Length: 249
Image (cartoon, rainbow, N blue to C red; front, top):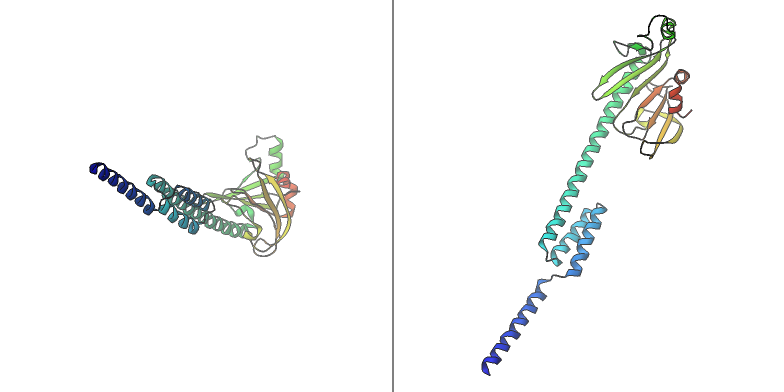
């Protein structure tokens, strides 16, 4: 009888100690899940301050160390990804700025004589067989010519009418979007939407450059990545029907 009482007393004390241990652990499955969800929602919003608060709460209420380790990895990975994205964007903006600065200077320097923009300009019909219409046009100089210059990963291109070199266009394709403001003071003439190859609408703008080396010329720029920038004289549109469509005419 005494042994039985001692045994039962021991069981009661053991049960009480387990209850006490559970109570002191502070772990709570419901609050744990709430903290995990709160952390992930904060990450989705890139709110790292709030994500840190929810993460600390998860460590308080979650008993599953593997889940906590996974949570920490999600936080670290997302921060690293966003940092890399910001760095790449900053580099692209810097590259864009450098390309456009070189382009506007080059175009301005060669505006009066676009045939000097390259040491080896090439004109339409240069390779035409004798007696063909293209060969006849080459003699009259009623044709378009091109002059190019390499600028790092970009190519600067001048197109001009050989018989009248004031009919000219300069182009470059920078890696990022371009606004007219990137080319200098300007007056907006038209903004419209075009469809990308994926079907996404992208803004295109035509403006008149109002000061600087390219003053009086017209520019067409795009909000898309890797889209050509066009700067041309008003008379050039009549010689290049393809540009008319690009310029929203």
